[in-house]
Length: 168
Length: 159
Image (cartoon, rainbow over the protein chains, first blue to last red):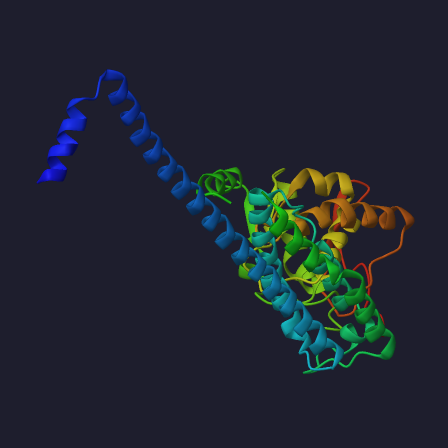
């Protein structure tokens, strides 16, 4: 009771400028709260989206790695290679188009995997000769070409991940 | 591609004779020659593309070739099919009378227009005939501006 009386007395002694100051403090506090919340949400959303795209890139790297590994070890059915490349190409194009729009990353960065790798496999003499078989066995020369491809282009996935992470 | 763009694309090809690789040939197109795979580019050309192209040529129309909805292509399939077309009808006539649609994998259209067409036109000028690896019925070729139907090449022994 005593405390509320004190508060009433002090409020009654407020002049106009005091009221304006008090109002300013309240507005500033609300504004600060709103800004912090909004920025925090935006940062969280950005991070979630970045993590999603980074995971997509990691998965695609893993898919290509498995494909190359199967080709290398002679476990690939030639007739299933073409549909696999088509599905992967559509997926890669979709993800790269989105990260290009969102972060300005070059949409063609994975072209070697989309086109050159498919050409390397489907135009390979072993692949053509054994197309009607259930699995294609690559010669040492062809396997070296696959290894060389992987060595030359594997860095592309990490480059994309770094670019996504560093994007504003 | 947005719905509006798809609609515009469809309207663009509405009046054209359209052949679709998946509908008119196979959902599973394979490699270049008949001797190495079923559903080859060579077979597609001789069974579907050559005749369809002559049909539109006679009407002075355009042929739309839809590459979508298949299980995927090897570049050799498309190179053989569209390359034979250029060899038999010349680059100028083919470019004037064909429209390639490849919304799912746009790079195929680019490859056909920028690589296959000029390379096979060069081949045509050099008189290096396409390799045929199976027996085909007579097919059309433009000779001295006249369409002639013959068996122009015979199968070679190996692929």
